[in-house]
Image 1 (spheres, one colour):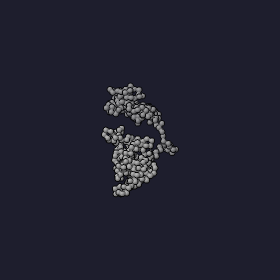
Image 2 (cartoon, rainbow, N blue to C red; image 1 turned 30 degrees about the vertical axis):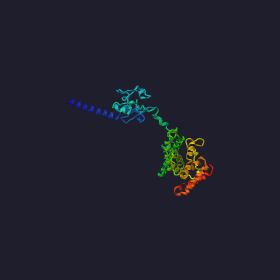
Image 3 (cartoon, helix red, strand yellow; image 1 turned 90 degrees about the horizontal axis):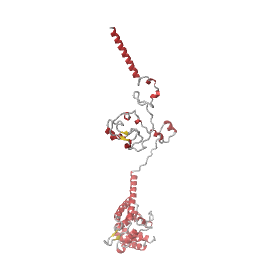
Image 4 (cartoon, one colour; image 1 turned 180 degrees about the vertical axis):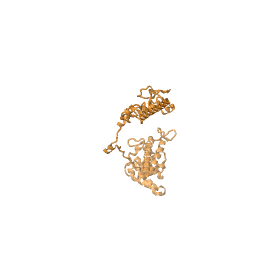
Length: 380
């Protein structure tokens, strides 16, 4: 009976001792005396990572060109573990520099859970999470201390004391109205069409047509695509004339383009439109940036053989058709352009007489005839 009593008492004392030890262990995070006599600074955020029971100590300070992901405290960056991988790549194969290991693989990076994901993401070819991907060019990834060398905006004293960053001024660009935008778009279209039309007209007038002895047909000997360029030039110049109600040069050039195509009626209409927009033929060329002959592709020294040949081709229309008002109108212009003022004045007088005699048919040419007659009386 007495032995049994002492056995019960002993068992109770042992239980109390275990409970006391367990309580002490719970009060000491790491057990032992070290956790109770450690300095307060050793557990600060600059020395450790994590919480009270999950902290990792000590943490190496970040250095230049060294990322935190390369620390051995992270499980996936721990290169001391042994992984099996049959796709190990050397540093030369992955194009990496600065890594001192012999090979890199998905297992080295902790990609043992799924090699397919590692291959698709490109991480299987990376030596360490602390370095960029192989396709990243050298020097692209900045160092950790790169912020120290980043330009800072200019601040005043108030902003410096409060740690404020100045806000860049907002530049509000004025947006025009719908009408203004439409006008700007129209002017841009006119400039582009005018440039294209002048260029095509110049390239289409580099050679004078001659009669082929075999076929007895006028054609270009060297310029095989001059006809096509002339058609495109007319299309662009006509667009400029439609969009710009004050431009007279496109119609003047179109008149010569139509004459080159033997479209006499359309040439006269374009010429009349040009004169209507700029009635003073004396200053017709004075308002142009270049002499009129320079708009032709074969212009040399202020003259053009193409222009002279074309004007001479149509300078006899009035003699062949003395009762045809349109023929006299073109003859007056061609002879005036050639400098034959006497013939131009004579053709203008004949045209004026026909227009006065037949106002219903040729009355629209009366003002044109009077203008050519006055211009021809003044030496050029």
